[in-house]
Picture: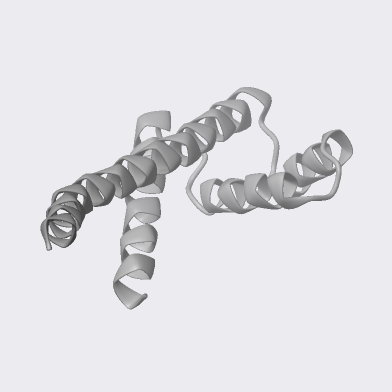
Length: 109
């Protein structure tokens, strides 16, 4: 009986820690994606690439795979915004969209 109570107590105490870790993981992932979006916007503003030119460069540099797919998905979101949008605004919008999507996915599960 003592062993069962210890196990239940340990389970109760570790559940909030796991939930906090999931939040940290989401924050880290979204910060990474938003940082990527910010860098894409900076490159876009510096080099003046339109979407087609940017996509061609990415396809030439990166082999087909999940990384390239993810990069192009982030870039597409960036290219839907005006070129004059600040890199800080691009970061904020990408971060917010990622968190909303992640939380929405978690709520639906």
